[in-house]
Image (tube, rainbow, N blue to C red; front, side, top):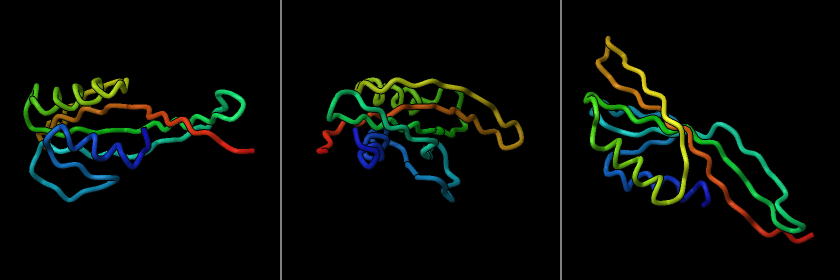
Length: 110
């Protein structure tokens, strides 16, 4: 999967999605950013690009159904992830941070 396709994939969770930052106030919503990219030779002419992406799901509801939809979308597209959850009592916001690795293999001509 290419990084530019990842945005469209996140939209399938059915809530607003932003890249890097947003001024959205109504929750739930998703904001994502790239953390790092590595390049690995898989075979003689095949290069694999792995990009670590942080996907943050913000809501005001514990067990928000859109979080489950987001997880389902990622799993259906064979994207593994880790989840860490935090609660901001001042803002009454539940923050779920998912770390996803997107892999893209490409043939490279010498």
